[in-house]
Image 1 (cartoon, rainbow, N blue to C red):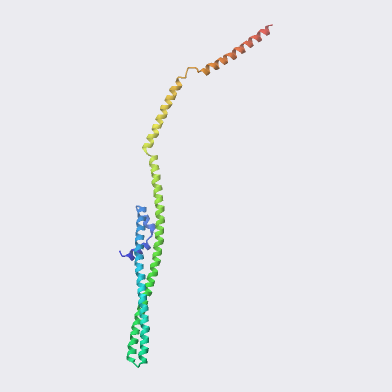
Image 2 (cartoon, rainbow, N blue to C red):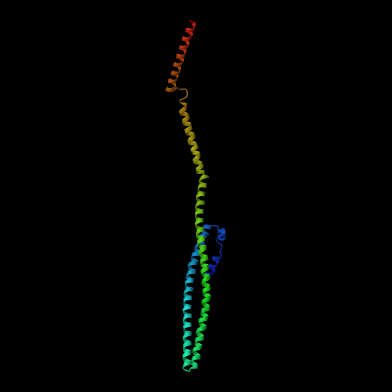
Amino acid sequence: MGIFSRFTDIINSNINNLLDKAEDPAKMVRLIIQEMEDTLVEVRSSSAKILAEKKALTRQVTRLEKDAEQWQGKAVLALSKDREDLARAALMAKKKSSESAQALLAELSHLDEHICKLQDEISQLQDKLTDAKTRQKAIVIREKSANSRLKVKENIHSTRVHDALNRFDDYERKIDDIEAEVESYDLGGKSLADEIAELETDEKVDDELAQLKAKMKNNKK
C-alpha cells in the first residue's frame, strides 16, 4: 500500500468503530497511534520533497520569464539593425520561453492545490492522533482500575479467605472454651469480697434483732 493511500485510509477511518471491533482495545489504540505517527513522519518527509520541488519549479519559471524578457530585448536590437530575420528568431525564442514558463506556472498551481490539501489532511491526522492518545490514557487507566477491582473480587471470593475466616471462628471458640473453664473454677466458691460482704450483712441483722428485743422488753413493762 502506498503512503498516500494508507494516509487517506487513516484520515477516513473511525477510531470508535475500530475500537468496537477490537478484542483488545488498548492494543488496538497502540497500533493506531503507531500507524499514525509513522504515516505523519512519511508524509512530512514527502511534503518536504514537494516543497523543494516547488522551489525548483519557481526558480525555473523566474529564469524562463527572464529569458523571455532578454529575447524581447534582442528582437528590438535586431530590428534596430535592420535584421528582421534575427528579430523573428529572437521572438520565436521568446515565445518558447514564455510558453515553457506558463506550463510550469500551471504545474505550480496544481502543486499548490496538492500542498494545501496535504496540509489540511496532516492537520486532520494530527487531531486524530491527539484524540487517540487521549483515549489511550483513558483506556490504560480503566484497564488498571478494572484489574485492581478484579483482584479485590477474587480475594473476596477466594477459598483461602474463607478458610482463614473459618480458622478465626475456630480460634474464638477455643478461647471461649478456655474462658468458660476459668469461670467454672469460681462456681461454688466465695471470694474474699463475698465473705466480707456477708459479715457486714450478718452484723446489720444482729443489730436489728437486738433493737427489736429491747423494744419488746420495754413494752412488757
